[in-house]
Length: 121
Image (tube, rainbow, N blue to C red; front, side):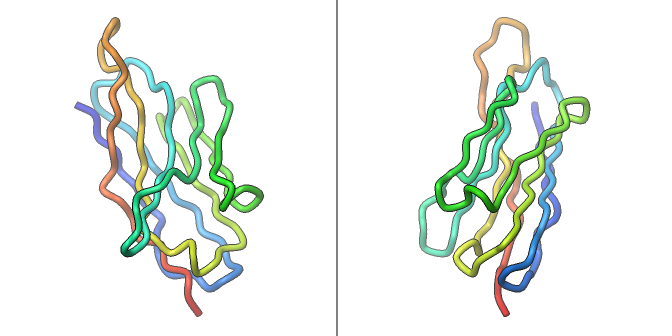
């Protein structure tokens, strides 16, 4: 099995910054991609930003220019650096990793437990 542990959420004022962390552990052969999704109250979960094994990234239009997604392959970790935060960024943020646990197996998605980010004055 694969476990994802997130940290770094909290309360921040509009215009502020916050950095989320996510570390994957367990039975990992390789990680194809890691990313951050978010779900605001009463809204569907949406993809915020993803980084692939190749290093390429993909971000939602709503966070482009404000969020970056650094990755530390040696630690099986991914981060979400959030700048210029807005009240509409308030959500539970979930880390997701697409992992191959055994050579030859298909990649599977694993989720973290989520961390709350609240942007409010």
